Structures are given as structure tokens and as C-alpha cells.
Image 1: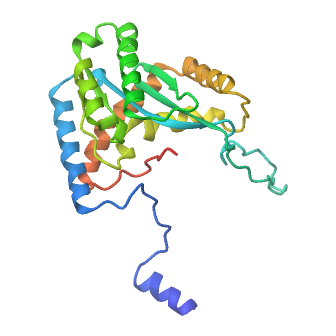
Image 2: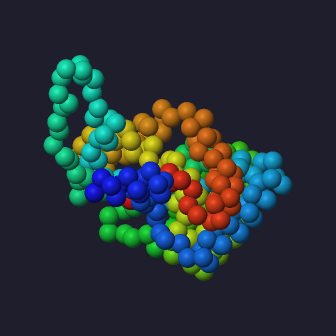
Image 3: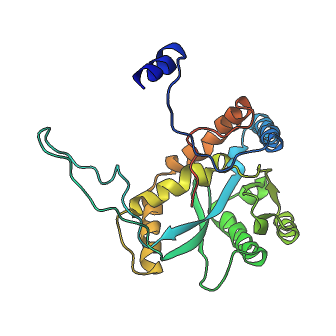
Length: 255
């Protein structure tokens, strides 16, 4: 066994690694689609100085009433001679609520909690888009006049004919978005993981309590955080092109 290991490592220069998890094993067609769309988006960004300033992005996500602490959050200081602490493994609560969140580089524009008994369908999503336009109009003076660039994923309620009609009527310019691409969606790779982080380790007995905790995070989070997340888009588009359409490393997949 040692001899075989020596041959593999020393002579064949091979190492044992853990597979990298990706959202989906992309087909050659899907890889090429990602490259083409990222080139298109990079061209739009390079040709318009205020491109990212007009961009609004959003998605749906689940918020659990209890989310266990991360390993980093549960770490403690100890002396070198002390044994490491032990902790029982905790799991997410079954209770959860879905929220639709829209934001731009200046901050959160809209958070809509899905009412009990409703599902995310085209009718509901179109109602949210109507309210989003009103929020943009009231919170971002002049944005409607300059034009809003909307980025969303390809979920069916987002892309059906009824939704497309509403997007056109509202005057939104819709960005193309490749399928199965959370690594190119700021909500997935940036906002949602950070948004949920301070909720870990706390139990919320109601939607009101959960919503209040999220509202507090929104109030305390500086504008620079949101600007930084949006500003990463061009470098991710560029990296995706360099990789031939493969996933950008360390992308977060929201559950």
C-alpha cells in the first residue's frame, strides 16, 4: 500500500482531492450559452459608465425560524493544554418562510414575505414587480427616468409571457441570465449568505420576530456592502468567459 501511494504521489505527481460541488453539471451547450451571455453583459458594462448604477437584482429565498450556528460562529478561545469543546449537532427548523428581495448597489429596495397559502406564480410575481417600481420611484430619485436594468433568474414565474408583458410595461430593461447560474446572481453569491449569517443560532417564534431581525440587519448594513456585491459582477462575467463557461469558484448556492 505504501509502495502504491509512493508511486502515485512521487512518480505520477498526483494528489487526492475532494470533488468541488457545483449547482449542475453543465452541458457543452449550456457552457457556451454562459460564455455568450457573459460577453454580451461585459460589452454592455464597458459601453455604459452607469450600467451598474441602473441595475436592480432580486430573487426568492427561504428564511428558517432557526438556523444553526456556523462552525466559525461557534468557535471559542482555549488554552493549548485544554481539549477542544464538543457541541451537539443542530439542524434547521422545519418552520420557514419565503421572501422575495430586490436590491441595488445602494441597499435593499423591497422585501416581500410570501403570504401563507400562496405560491410564487406569475400573478404574484407581477404584483411584486409593480410594487418594486413604486419603491424605485420613491427611494431612487431619477432612476425611473434613467431606466432600470433588471436582473433575475430563469424561474418560470419570472420568464412566462405574462411576466414579460409586465416587465415591458413597467419600462424595465431585462438582462439575459444563463440557466443554472447562481454564481452570476448577486443575491446568491453575495447578499443571501451574509443576510442570514446574523440569524444563525437564534430562534424566532414568529414571522414578525424574524422580519424584525432582518430589518435590523438592513438598517445596520452600510451602503458599501451592497455596492461591493454588485461591483463583483463584471469580474465574475470575465472569469466565466475565461473558464469557458464553467462555474466561478466559491459560488454560493442558496437553499
